[in-house]
Length: 193
Image 1: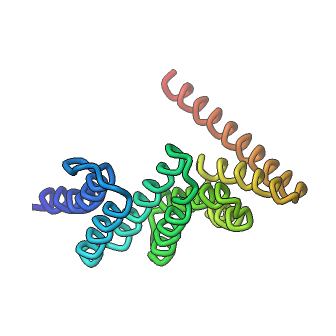
Image 2: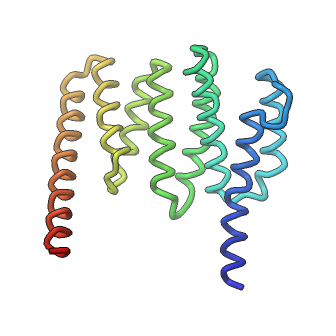
């Protein structure tokens, strides 16, 4: 009985994202223009928002933000950046409001929000998004990437001292992680010998 509940719960969590991805990728649909696709997605959110947990809804907003960002990258059309920012901000706001958010999911959203801000030449907003990610104590590759991107954003606004601080912290964390990895490999080798 518990296995059925867990498998149903996993299905229901992925169900909404899968449905959203079908709409975004136009699978099963005639090719829709951007306005028609936006209407279809608005309908999806209207019909399903109340059925989703805050994490599920935030993840769907994140996926939709990615859709607009990839449209910018593939078509070189900056006009979609504001839509990407809008949905990444909605996702980040929801994830911040969750008492125990999925940290990796929050980091992904904050990183992508910073990328889109930087792409829009909103470097101060990018720095703020990257900074929020960096403040999350759990260090990951996203932390290192955020420090690098934050350093670039500081460089773009001419704050070379803060750029160097960001790059320096990135190198320090990278070196610490390499030492931890070396220690784990050594322990593993010692254990299997």
